[in-house]
Length: 202
Image 1 (tube, one colour):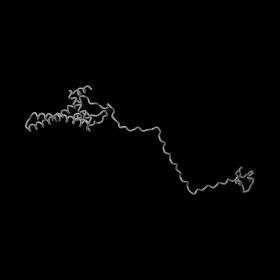
Image 2 (cartoon, rainbow, N blue to C red):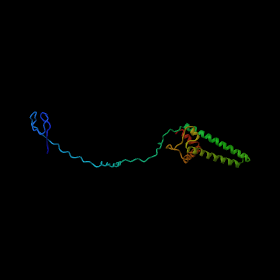
Image 3 (cartoon, one colour):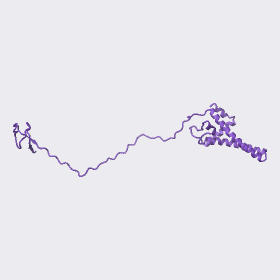
Image 4 (cartoon, rainbow, N blue to C red):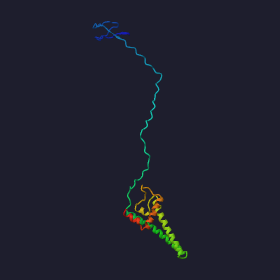
């Protein structure tokens, strides 16, 4: 290992002459310092290293988690406010008045036709009675069934009383189901309106 002579005295700090073995100021022996170790040259890279990207792993599947099947929301059975007997009674009175006026107009038209045809006979009376009965039946059926199965879900009388007709889930009735209600109403009338009397207590 190469050694170099110290430039200054290590004892008093005086400047030393080149090659001196003793300090001319304090007489101390001049020591030697080891030469620094050679520094290895740094390697020069020709180009910058390419960036390396690590692909991301796909997310792990969630075990034990399942989504329930979608189900349409339904109105629970028995929700909503039911119309009182008084409200239903007023509604049916309004509907009956409308039907009665329609039947009266039809009766007047038929009477005029019979009069112009030559007067009343047993045959014409039977024909007029049959026509009136069929007209009353069909008009009653369609009046209630068509309106209660429509978008408004109510007859004129029920709309006046803010009443709508629905099934047990709050949905609009089909025409077939509204027809069944209309026929049940007619049967109630045949049996002395027993259904209307029971409605007052249920």
